[in-house]
Image 1 (cartoon, rainbow, N blue to C red):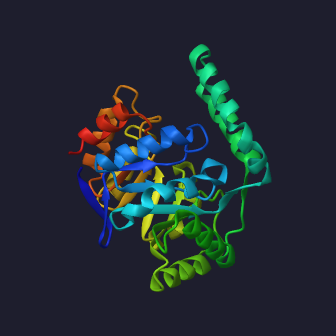
Image 2 (tube, one colour):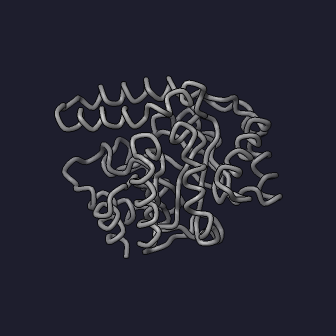
Length: 280
């Protein structure tokens, strides 16, 4: 499928694979089949974090990608990690998935309720860690070990909710990690709702990752300010212009931001085929 260069010589598929649901809402077998099929279809960009899959996603995905590492772009994040409750919850995940599937079939809930419950679950099983060089390096080493690689293509600060007061220390650490080959690029992943909090130092990063969908508040300003820049987008279908189909949203994002990767959490072959076919 079509590729873009976000940073220097790092070449990513326009559609990236969002790994957040793996070993959470999505079980191992389904995740494995989806990842393998996505790679067959030309997807080479995989987005992870220490917290995904209640702390298990990196290790799981790493086993699937290791044999093709030189052709794969891997990103991960630090700042949020699974806590001891997540470990206790792991044996119950299959039961929880069944309950969720049943609710999806028979219940219709308001979006606000879904978001609220999602946040409650997230806060229950995950902790935010202090953003400092020591924790940053420790988290990176854990990610490298789990992913079975000696470097990350992209390393992000994971959705900080407050202004980063020691940003210079983190940027310097990121630069040093690039020099020694542990990471190839350093960025920040954030929600657009927190844009103003981080605005003063966003330009200091190699790459930005944030939610974006055609029609969201401020979309035209984003096109004006970031349309020619390298970005990684998550939640491309959520919100925005509800008159547009999912395919139309993905295509518009690419046309408005041609140097960007669009992350999709896609776990069935038809979904993957549809997304990839847009950018052949």
